[in-house]
Amino acid sequence: MRLGVEAALVEGRLLPGDVAIDDGRIQAVGLDGVGRGIAVPGFVDLQVNGFAGVDFLGADADGFAAAGEALLETGVTAYLPTLITSDETDLLPAIASVPMRAPGPRILGVHLEGPFLSPARLGTHRLAARRDPDPALLERLLAAGRVRLVTLAPELPGALELVDLLHGRGVVVSLGHSNATAAEAHAAFDRGVRAVTHVFNAMRPLAHRDPGIVGAALVRPDVFLQAIVDGVHLDPDIVRLLWRVGAGRLSLVTDAIAGAGLGDGTYALGEIEIVVADDVVRSEDGMLAGSALTMIEAVRNLVAVDVPLERALEAATSVPARLLGDTTVGRLAPGGPADVVVLDDTLEVVRTLVGGESLVAG
Image (cartoon, rainbow, N blue to C red):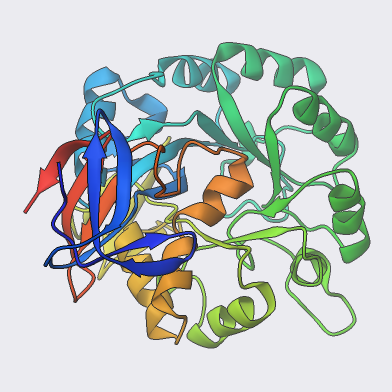
């Protein structure tokens, strides 16, 4: 089967020519022929709290199927359902309920955003459910399901021991919801932490004599910068700064909540009631509480601040895949899985394929 495209994003550049798929894998690229649009690797989103009316903290199999179907329409072919800070009695069954396989995008595992977060930088996370680092609790959470990514605050007593435990289990660690100083952040990065969760948001602000996590991450070429590029969480000039300092390690995330894809209204984020108004998500006290962003919108927003298209697409594909250490997603190459998004000239999603199967077709 041929896709009928004029070019494909292969190893970071747009290669002219069509793409052939056979038995769920990319057979060839750069084939002669006349086509329209570009084929790019399916988007990889490492922070999705919910989508299309589904909050993942309380979702069942039908909920994951419904959210997955809607995510496909935005170009996402692989993602991490994200569970915010909650009581253990809620977290354990929520982790266990995340299916290994579901219709739609590939579910790569679970992102636990908490509960080992700073009480000073919780955002909308519930203080009552926050916990200090507790290896026994972490062991129970890891035993409940396939946890792939954990966000924690490195300055908490015992946090670095949790980092060691997580790395020993092959779990990626990201710093976030933290009041850490630059020294405390560097100590975690030296321990092997390689990412920051929604950089600039819910962390000690960058200051000229107190750079915090942000400053430490910006000067570390070995640290990935996860960013919500929705025009709300970050000023466009901050996005430009992130790109100029961190090109090639900037990873787009949506931090999408249940209302994403549905428009204005009142929705749930775990036990928290949130309101979407004019595409901005806030809790009742006015705090930002995730986003209504889609990944294709994030790509467009990155292009709008003068990031080259090929590099903006990498920030939604190969970069998050590298962050997670997953070689099965985020690439379009002969022999690899045919998880592909076809985009038109206006960067609208025309077609989405997972394993060579067209699940969205315009």
